[in-house]
Image (cartoon, rainbow, N blue to C red; front, side, top):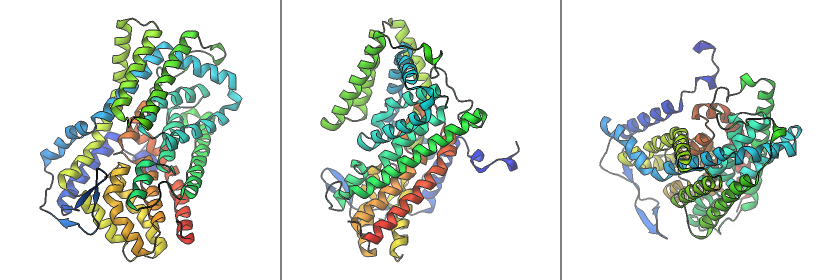
Length: 464
């Protein structure tokens, strides 16, 4: 097929190329934009921007050598997320070798019946979405490969698996009415009651997950009619596909032991996250402990476990690499001191706009900023102390300003190549970023349009 005959989505470059383009672009920006900085004050142990304090500082443009140095520095900065990708891969590799997951998925599909395959896709989409809403993002990384096995067992592909798990969790987390990183941090800055205004946010979140479920089923029907048309065609499904007919599957006592260890591990992880302030390193440790326990109850010898571990690391390595590679963008912004400059100029653009246009433009400005500051809480602390007073001047309620911020940050998480968690979870179901973008981009536009309708409603009703 010649280039002129290719559809737009077929021209999306490889994910490595996309990220290198971002690295070069941000490097050029450090030469074109002035270096600048806001003053920051320490509030509850976290640095918060002081509105009106932006000033230009001595320029620190990034040189050619520094541009490439930012890549290893990105790996250093993202080492915790890189390792949880490897740890999750090791845990899943050991469980895969034990046949516990394959046998349980095969048995589940046998019990429910393939005639209910569309209902299974809808239910799983909402289950993973609820995990995003209530549990978090990277905390769910170990559950992504399960969606891959179920999708293939139903006759789907790895792209469908990513839609069911990564897509639903990203939508659920990004638009969660109880997201502590975006809504929680933002409402604290705006001096609003924690998680207030949850009803409208819940309607938006549920509606977006419903669209995600429909989108997944629609894609599923398409590939069932013509498997060659699927974006997952040719992806590596080794070790994820069922090795025998669905009717042949049963779950042994040994398999139940493995699944029991996995469930206990997840329960301990959730308890630690919500009660002991655990984060990435603690979860990685739990994953490794689960892997060891599963290997022991499966009666694997030391050589088998060692070989499985290294094979699992090899499969997870491309995704782990992409996480560190993506973090280079954040490092370059810090080197060039242009992160605050971007926030300042985006806020300047909004001044003087009509109230409805201002609300939508505020969400768009946060979408742009999200590609450079992918951390939800980091973006909130950097931009909301400026955006909330600006919203007051423009006639937006503070609740509406927080909603605009959440929409801008949350929806574009679906296509953000600099978001380490997205890259990590895509790697767990072996989906390259370029194929993911082809699949998910239309959904992003649909959810954005829905979100803007809700945002206009919020402005019209004085959402507070």
